[in-house]
Length: 311
Length: 252
Ligand SMILES: Cc1cc2nc3c(=O)[nH]c(=O)nc-3n(C[C@H](O)[C@H](O)[C@H](O)COP(=O)(O)OP(=O)(O)OC[C@H]3O[C@@H](n4cnc5c(N)ncnc54)[C@H](O)[C@@H]3O)c2cc1C
Ligand SMILES: Nc1ncnc2c1ncn2[C@@H]1O[C@H](COP(=O)(O)O)[C@@H](O)[C@H]1O
Image 1 (cartoon, chains in turn purple, red):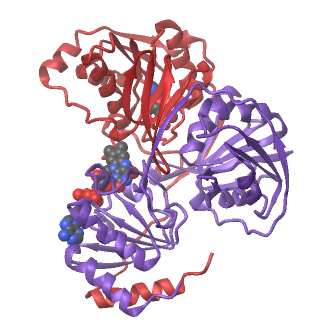
Image 2 (cartoon, rainbow over the protein chains, first blue to last red):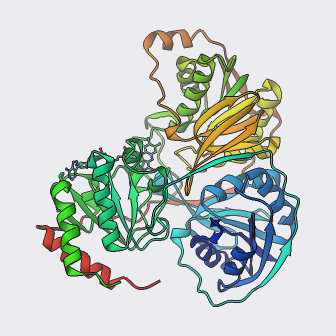
Image 3 (cartoon, rainbow over the protein chains, first blue to last red):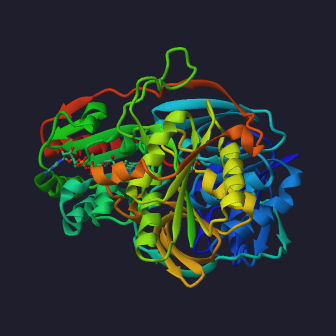
């Protein structure tokens, strides 16, 4: 039997996390990908290129991924699979537990390591402990933290099956609220510049964005910075925001509260800029500069522009 | 409208937890416990709906040990009307919690069930969605705004691309995110008054739900530790270091 991966997508394109979830799911069995979208075809074509994908099922006619309709579609397909896997994204977190309850199963969510078909690691207590759980269930429903896995390669050409499914939802879509941004995807970026509440205003927070642009980095923020209105909520990194694992995380004016650190545990290297040498972030940073961000950030951006980064 | 709010007693979010040396779990003896932060936002949302004349009764339910009384009292002090403690010792898995809540919904017949988006001990983020699945009710998770419009709810949800606003008919399940509101701190008079409010205590066994765990916790381990690296003394030194780091990144 195969493993079904629910494709993650936005604005008609496949999200980078899907290739990572496929790579994780391959440890469990042969992978099939399900794309559910208003128009699934272009997304399915992208998914078919991911290495390791045996088949793509494209279901068109359902926009905005309402949990009730998505659950019904997944439930109708569940029988044929040992595992149903989604990213630990807003969509995956919304639908997998609902589906699990419908199938009378305990899901395992936010998986960061797969030791076998029924043995998984997941973080608890904001990542301050790692729980290894085994499941005796015949079928397992998982959400995967994409950032904990490397993406599968491309170059595949899997077959695509168009499938029709009646999609009935009681949810009425009203509006989306997005920030237009040219910055790379936060969840899969190699470099992330994170800013805290100490920037003091939305205008000053743009210093973070300038530095990020120079580095080709994504921007992250603390909850305090988001609450203050300096950054949009989708930039929040941490226990209740996005979980990231960049090669380089640059934390500027961030104290390093445990709820924030929960989101950056997978970062390979951490650079901190902070006035306080005793800040928790400084104590775990690989490299730290003690000083005032108001002076440091513009100077640093200018200096990096001068050096001219080649990426 | 009648609202049911589910609240969980967890290790206080400020506590730096310690993993037991024998790998059996996290030390919870003699640790400060409190209401799951997200659940405070759920209670606050319910109380505000009552204050706005849109809700008539708020019932609080918690599943846990005797001491979970505390968090129910906190919710009653914030303005909820009565409480129910479903007593259960040890870990109750999210699926069993959802089934117990379903049984409570059958008894109480609320129009809206409010929960937190996740409990900060196990960080599961499951129960609300599971309850919605069991009841086959619409759900709106990760709410940062709730508006009652006739017999529908307009909920703004925090999602990966930003926010999305959806409308769902009642009865429904909503899970609260932290930007939903600022929970109040109940003053002493409210705390005193809370003690007079009805609080039923019933054993989990009464609800006929199988509490046998489906998952086995094989072990609990501490995460890899990080330690401080080196300091740089100037912006230009930092720029050099960063440029070197960036040039070493492997292409994905
Ligand atoms: C249930 C729950 C969930 C949470 N989830 C998250 C989450 O997902 N993500 C998250 O980030 N937080 C989360 N939090 C909040 C978290 O506890 C902290 O409050 C938050 O991370 C602090 O943000 P901060 O570092 O911007 O602010 P602060 O903690 O106030 O730190 C500001 C830092 O800036 C430094 N500083 C000040 N001025 C300057 C200057 N001029 N130059 C350089 N440095 C300066 C200070 O020394 C300090 O270290 C959560 C909290 C709770 C209760
Ligand atoms: N034992 C419990 N008693 C009451 N409510 C609970 C319990 N466990 C979870 N919940 C509710 O479900 C939400 C999500 O929890 P979880 O899915 O465990 O992360 C919490 O914020 C609570 O509102």
